Image 1 (cartoon, rainbow, N blue to C red):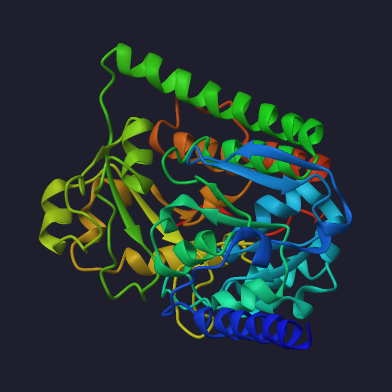
Image 2: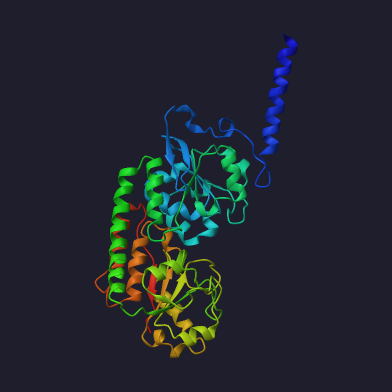
Length: 392
């Protein structure tokens, strides 16, 4: 009997060591069971439910989610709208450092949330740099991942380890993706009723714009030629455009009825001569606070209309641009590059529709609609500029 007891203890010790050495990060092979690593603080609750995520996967979660991990840091805006002030106690980790990867967002949300510095920073999923063992140690009740990262090594290992991974999808449909993701996560977090109010508000605004654009196209209205450039470089450097019309910004411009001169060009910069010879009717520069030290196009919570206009003017100094129709007609704009990850993305859609068809959408007030939404549903106050027009 004594020999049997020692043997059983030895086997248990060896199994424990095997688990430790197999789960050591993204480069390791994880072959643990759901029972061994999928447990969390929710073990104390016997209530679970099965949900379907946006990849069609069945996921079993506790009905009392207390510990949330965001693999993509920018999803904090979606979670903030869903949880309100409760985010401060339930969000335990994000991918990249929120403070370093989104300067304005961190500064803004810090006005409401006081535990942002206490969250674990997991590393960039874009670089496949997340350590799976660290995630396991957090004992998450849910791990929220956008489906663009499905198939990456780190995420695969989380799934293999039995962790509660849930896939959302913000990219397939830039106009409704964030709302669809909010509906899924809202159900999982027990916030379905309040999320439905936000989603209905946003979808009503968005669908009204898209329906009117479709009506315009049915009348064979002339599509304005549009040039879009990512403003993450200084104005003297030509930034990338977005020409893939199946997703992202290329799909946005196609859906909103613009004739995108960069269509088919991918994400590379257009030849300056291409822009001049195309002579666009509308020029839109994407902006964010990517780099606080560089003179780039800034949009966000702490931008101002004047600063945005002053920066847009620098683009007009490019060789030949003063002769472009867009510049002559004062149709040079900026839009927040990540507007579609915000729960109030509909306001960006309204603003862009006005940029493309100013006469057709002159009665739309995206600024008022955004302020109204934030005051009703979001725990932080409205501030800043998310779109702007050059004021010469």
